[in-house]
Length: 112
Length: 114
Image (cartoon, rainbow over all chains, first blue to last red; front, side):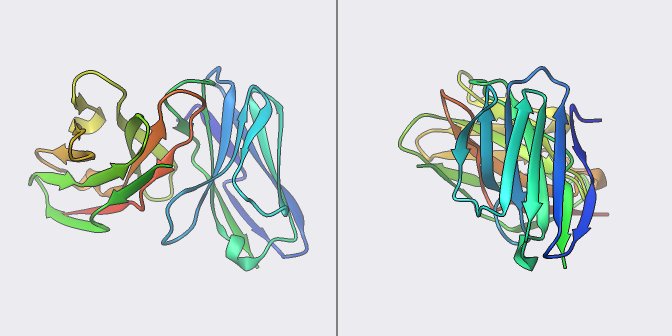
């Protein structure tokens, strides 16, 4: 069992839908991350929140919109996605300034 | 900027044989080094990390890695693998200091055969 919980684990959505991925961490951390894992590509850092402030936005298209309402929760809002956005989206957390990141089990997203 | 190269995309090995998964990195600043493992349909689990001090680090499940600064390498080893070690292994670096910004290699698929 991981200290970082992601829901839903699997999501299928059409290109015109709006959906959200949710992440919750129970580790007392104050930095949270979204990574994207596509087939045949290295993991890509998408967003970083440290102390509830976005500190990294890695040239991610605006159809992905993160939200961090508090240090324990992180959302990724999705709208008008493309089929190439189908991937495993991994949430992670750490202490701000800490040296180790802990990952959730991921949300598998399929865009049809 | 940092980058990570995992030299083998796939490593097949027989059960109880030793294995080495290779990782090289480049960076203009000092870094922390990590190995993560991903079992099928799961997230990433931390195997071990190098922050400072002894260059030989031991992790979970009998794995160890050695940091070699002159060769900018951080190879992962296990003296005797099990079927259950079959998974994807990722090497990663993060600049020391500041918030974490893990940069991952492409991964090495370890396939352990009976």
